[in-house]
Length: 292
Image (cartoon, rainbow, N blue to C red; front, top):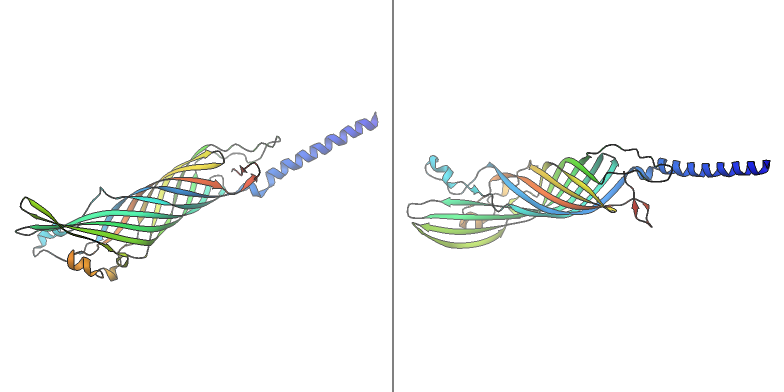
């Protein structure tokens, strides 16, 4: 009987030690304290152009008429597309650092009228720029701090399925391509006729790299073992997008459309949907990702 009691005691002790060691291993493993994510993102943006300094080829003889010759920036055709990749590192329950590699389309237009006594000429300019946007940002997850310790049944801690967040960062934009289309129209009395139209590549008129900041917010939704994110951001450009040294370099625009770029910056509202895939898994066979 004594031997039986001793054997049962030793068996119970060994099982307890094994369970305790497994429990401690789960709780002390630094592998599960952080997570990497990669993903895809896409959406749309709306751009507002803010002139810094205005320039023109033709100027009025009377300064009082200066506004008649200035460019009229439009606001109805300024919607572009965004698409690209994202990478993030979550080093704490509430804090994430990340970057994107996104192609952003900037579209805007303006009209410039050259009034005359007999007729008036209007030039419509439509711009289509493409930039590679590379931001560095911090994201704050608005969520309660939960106990990361696994319980003794080896069930992982519950992470909220929907988490709102706010974010802010700096942004660098590298010019990929820039085109503009110019259309001339002539009005004489009640009669209006369309003149010439041409498209020019204007890469040489723009600075190759610009910078700015952005702020925004959104939500993260858990969908199985991946995450869906929705976000809305506001970008404020700090750099002049126009190359001031090459403002008059395109002779076709200068001689035929009497056009040079103003100094300007961009303000952009963007709306993006993304898919995030976690990189670190507790079990690759069962596809159980690390959640923090």
